[in-house]
Amino acid sequence: MTAASPQPSTGIPPGAAGRPQRWRMLVVLCLSLLIVGLDVTVLNVALPALIGELRASTGELQWLVDIYSLMAAGLMLSAGSLAVRYGSGRSSSPAWSSSPVPPPSPRSPAARPSS
Image (cartoon, rainbow, N blue to C red):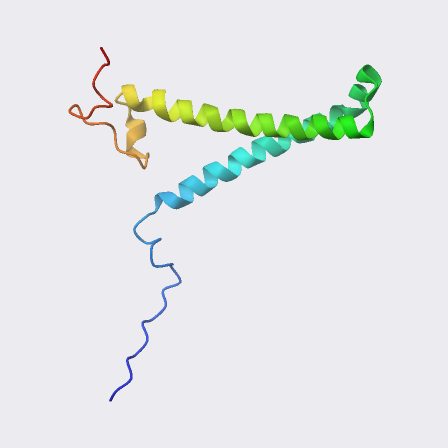
């Protein structure tokens, strides 16, 4: 019996070669995390002023920062969902050339106007 020779490693995971848009998605996700992080940093800079105005304790300030970051991330997810649903789907712009999702076809239910 002969031993099977191992496949040469190309350094690319098996499923990643056919999906180049994965890197674009990763960049978008990282940028959205950066935006939320910068937003929370601005809130942390404003905390001394909030202490004076609201007379908040340390625990209340911690709740304020946590809720603010959760709301910012949640609104970003909602805005992204709305942008996908209602954004460029109704126009035929050149943005489709770089989009990983193809435009709806005229026969698809998403392209038909609702009556």
